[in-house]
Amino acid sequence: MDKYLNEPPIISLKNITKKFGDNEVLSNVNFDLHKCEVHALLGENGAGKTTLMNILYGLFPPTSGTITVNGTTRNAMTTNIAINSGIGMVHQHFMLVEPFTVVENIMLGEEITKKGFLDYKKARKDILELSKTYGFNIDPDAKIEDITVGMQQRVENLKALYRGAEVIIFDEPTAVMTPQEIEEFVKIVKKLTTLGKSIIIITHKLSEIKSMADNCTIIRRGKFIDKVRVKDIDENTLADKMVGRNVSFTVNKKEKEVGKEVLRIEDLHVKDSRGLMAVNGLNLTIRQGEILGLAGVDGNGQSQLIEALSGLRKVESGKIYLNGKDITNLPPRKIIDQGLSSIPEDRQKRGLVLEFDVKDNMVLESIDKEPFSKNKILKQKNIKKNANKLIEEFDIRPNSPSVLAENMSGGNQQKVIIAREISLDPDLLIAAQPTRGLDVGAIEFIHKQLIKQRDNNKAVLLISFELDEILDLSDRIAVIYEGKISGERDGKDVDTNQLGRLMAGGKDVK
Image (cartoon, rainbow, N blue to C red; front, side):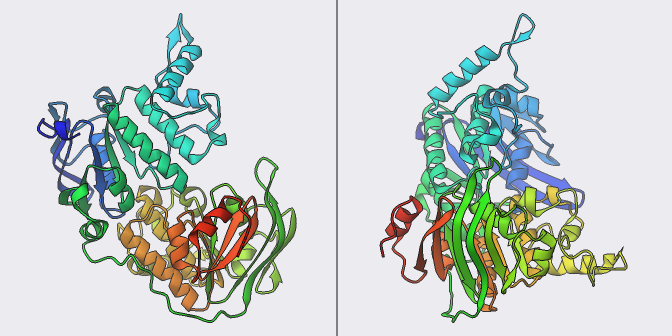
C-alpha cells in the first residue's frame, strides 16, 4: 500500500455535511482512500460512520460537500454510479434472500443469459472461480438459511467482487461472527489487498483495526476528529479519540456473597428447527448476586437454550424453575411476569419492532399495564416520559423518543433493548451477546449495568462469544458443548487453556 501513498487517492470525500431535517448527523467530514489500502472508519454508535459510507455508495445524497472517485468529482452519487465506478458495499445486516442458494443470491440483479434463457451453469462456474481465487471455499449450491454467519459474509463479499468491485466497504463486518470467523475474515481482507483491492471497514473494534488496518479516520458525533497511522498508535489512544474521554478497559467488581437460587435447569432437552436435539441433557443453576457466564463456540445449543428459557421454543423434556416455580413451556408473557427479562441475540428479529418508534419499543412488554395504559387506553404522556428517562440514562442517540427504530444505528438499537429489559427490574436477566455491535464507550457502560444488576442481588446469565467478556464479568463460568454443560469454573481462578479445551469438547480435568 505504501507505494500508492504518493499518488492521488482513488476516493476522496471533502467537507461532507448531511442533515435529516434539523438533525445534522455529519458536519464537514473528510475521508481519503488509496489503492490497496485498508482504511478503518472509527466512531461511536451513532457517530455517522454508516451515513458517510451510504453517501459514498449513493444510497442518499449529502447536504453539501463533494465526492471524488477515480478523478471524477460529483456532488452526489447513485448506487448505479457507485457500482459502475467499482465500489461495493457489504452492509451490517446482510442483503441476502435466505431460501435462495449461494449462486442465486450472487447473480441476483446481474443475471447472465444465453439465447434468452438464464445461463445458471456459467454463473455457477464464474462464482466458483472467484471463490477459488480469493480462497473463500463456499458451496455454491447451499441455501443461505443453512450456512453460518461467517459463510454468509463470504457470500456478500463474492457478490461485490462478482459485480467488479475494486473498493469494498464493510459495515461492522464482524458484529455477528465467532472468534474463529473473525480470524478468517482478517485473512480474507489481507488477501483482497494483495490482489489489488482497497478496503474500507466501518468498525469500533480496536483490536481488529490494529490487526488489519493501515490508516484510521476517527469521527465523533458527526465531526472529523483525526486521521492516524494505525501502526503508530495504541488501542487506548484510539479509544480516547473515539469517545472523547478516558475509557477503562478493566471491569471493577466487588466481592459479593451469593443469595438464594433463582434459576434451576434440570436435564433439559430442546430441539432445533431441523428437529435435531440442540440442548441435550443440560443442568445449570444461577443464584442471586452472581453473573454466570456461559462460554462456548457458536452452534452448541446456546440459541435454543435462550429460546426455551424465554418461552419461544418448546422444551421436549426436563424442567426450568424460576424462584422455585416451574416455568417450563409457559407462554413468554407469563415468563416475563414471573421475573425473567432477556436481551436477545438478534436485536432486529427478536428485540425490536423496527417500524415502531423508540418510545413504543421501550414499553413492548408492559404496554397493557399502569402507568402506560388504563382500561386499554394508552397513556402517551407517560410512555413518552419513560422513553425520555431511559434515553438519558442509557445515552441513546438520537435523543428523541419519536425516532423509528429502523433509522437508528445497530448499537443504539441494542441500547434501546437493554434499557427496556433492565427497566423491568427482573430477578433473572439473560444477556445474550449484550455488547454485540457496541463501541468501547458503550461496552464499558453496559458492563457496568450488568454488574449493577448483580450488585442489586439479581441473577445474570451472560451468553457471549467474546471470551474476554466472559472472563471479565463472570463470577462463575459454565462451558456449553453439544448442548450440555461440559464443565464449570470459578470466575476468579480460570485456566483459559482448560476453558478452551472444554469449549472444543475436551474432558473436564480440574
